[in-house]
Amino acid sequence: MITMDSHDGIEFYHGTKADLKIGDLIEPGFRSNYGSRRHARFVYLTATLDAAVWGAELAQGEGAGRIYIVEPTGSIEDDPNLTDKKFPGNPTRSYRTKDALRVVGEITEWQGHTDEQLTMMKKHLNELRQLGIEAIEE
Image 1 (cartoon, rainbow, N blue to C red):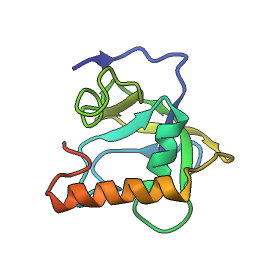
Image 2 (image 1 turned 120 degrees about the vertical axis):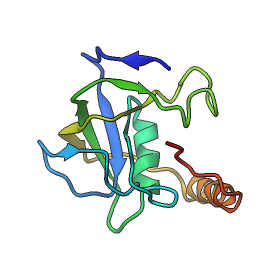
Image 3 (image 1 turned 135 degrees about the vertical axis):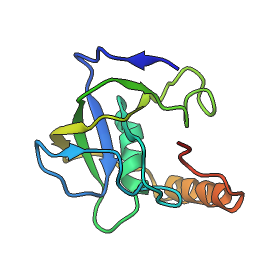
């Protein structure tokens, strides 16, 4: 597992449906936006806008998807749910942390995926759920 302690100069994003403000902290310990909605031991972030868009579109809850620019308050590591299991080498630039993320901005104009792409992704996630496979394994 690769740990990344120095992340200066990299912009990170977090996609969700939560309505947050600049300065708010996104912390582990709350119900996950995905799968069976267990209490999350990690919070997730990405350095690609596309991965954040997926997060915003697929998150549980009411309201519109939101994409926040976040700053890790501690070290981050590659997200093992995507790295090597699905995308060797972490091309999605997806990470997780046990430390909080600080909201430092919001992307208010972004392009979502097509209805066809969303339908296919939701179908795939439903198939995994029926097989007993969680979208996020902690």
